[in-house]
Image 1 (cartoon, rainbow over the protein chains, first blue to last red):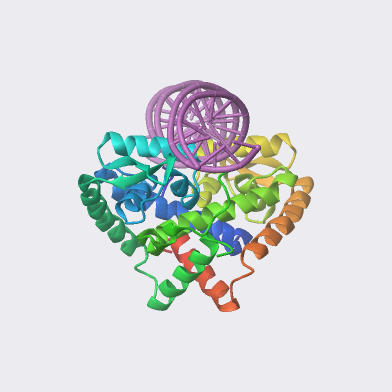
Image 2: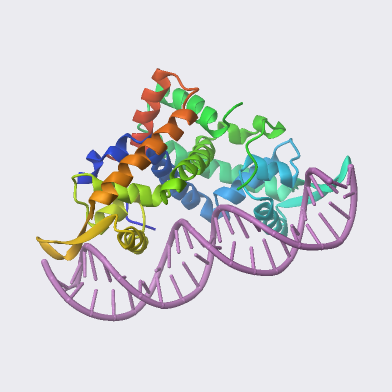
Amino acid sequence: MPAASVSSRLAASELTKDLSFLLARANAVSLAAGNRALAPHGLKARSYSVLLLAAGDSGPSQRELAEFLRLDPSQVVSLVDDLQARELVERRPDPSDRRANIVVATAKGRALAEQARGSAAAAEAELHAELTVEQRRVIGEVLRTLAFPGE
Amino acid sequence: MPAASVSSRLAASELTKDLSFLLARANAVSLAAGNRALAPHGLKARSYSVLLLAAGDSGPSQRELAEFLRLDPSQVVSLVDDLQARELVERRPDPSDRRANIVVATAKGRALAEQARGSAAAAEAELHAELTVEQRRVIGEVLRTLAFPGE
DNA sequence: TATTGTTATACTCTATAACTATA
DNA sequence: TATAGTTATAGAGTATAACAATA
């Protein structure tokens, strides 16, 4: 991983006003911290997201996971393969469509998801420590709008 | 690229409240739109960022580019190699440190940077069309804080 | 015909280590 | 000794096409 951020002469650059750049850099910082927090649980951001969705009560198909996480269906295959090999999730045939697999967490998977959620939340709290309550509220709204455009 | 986002049963998931997830997804949307807008100029988000910094008046070294963009120095090498082969930037020896290369845009590079900036700004404006003025102001502040923690 | 999951493959991105030239 | 740039390489992530089973 590259060195930690430094205050730099480049901070005066026009890029600092580019929201897409700031979004990319903020995400890189957040992703690195998240992966660090999840590593002790044997998870990364991707596998954590799949596990969390599988541990919820929505009963997502692999296709739905791919769309929601903006992954290719083939990437979901290997993520689920890995989680299934570790007995954290199961593939269940969808009774209403025999082509589809419903991905559901096992008891072991739900327990791990709960632990990992604690670690992820702690890491996020640390990153957001400098933000005001108002800033947190607005950023939630805005990111939801940007993350799911047209909805 | 995966399918466009869909409104989904999964929107009720706890992940929708996870700012790190929303940040990652918003970035994926933004990056895809940015790369699409930059493609006609033969650029991607990465090379565009390097070109823009080289076109400014900071005169960044490769090391500074790596830190600011959170890239490994070896990644900067190939980005600059590519831009240099296209005569968009030059490597100039730093007079005060003969180990370092200062990366500066050529006239051709500055012209392309200006064009690309227009395309990128248009794409960003479209993505942010739904945001209020107040939301834009706050997101700028917040993303700067998250992108450059501790500064 | 179209879609879900799968496999295979190629390509890009990321991370690491080692080397050189300078400091 | 340490740092800037470079090279090489391996690993992770991404994108595409093709196939079987099912709709």
